[in-house]
Amino acid sequence: MTTPLGSAVQFLKDFGLFDVILPFLLVFSIVFAILEKTKILGEEKIGGEKVPRRTLNTMVAFVTGMLTIAANEAVNTINQALPNIVLLLIMIISFLMLVGVFYKEGEFDFKTSHGKWIMGFSVAILVIILLIFLDSIYTAGGISWFDTILNWIIGPSFGSPIGAAIVFILVVIIGIFFVTKNPRAREE
Image (cartoon, rainbow, N blue to C red):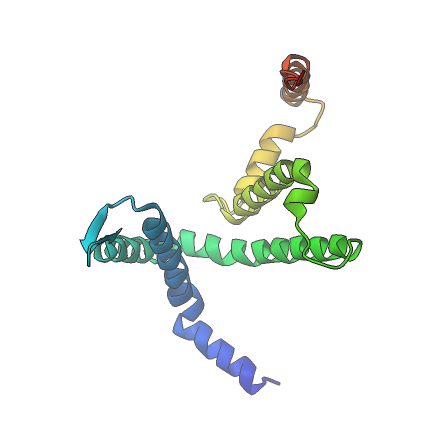
């Protein structure tokens, strides 16, 4: 049995809210915010103050949003990747809340208390987001890019010469990095 709210969501889905309107608004907002922040397209004087060229930024963001929704694969990728990214965000917030439980009362600042972990944490999140997007983009055969890359690396058996060579090269590169990295300058 269908609920009224379920029927309303199905109506919005049939109307194209999730496949056209929301992806357009997302891409438009992100591109517009980036253009406004970076001022790539220049500035103009309004009331003696320099501000970004809002009309030009709006037009570029609008065209980018329209071109994105015209590409069905891009919309499918956005619709599949974003729920996983939101789950990742919820996991990060949950982790920070659990870590914050062990600190005394007051504002919890992960950067000042664990500054060395920030870079590793950021790189790990970036890698996870890239893997999420690679798993959301499909080839013509219906296989995700993540699966394609994983099958190429691992191959039919991990003991293949290509897999062993890749592992050996990675171990050598990591070893060279740790041996040749510069020690921190010591203050005297």
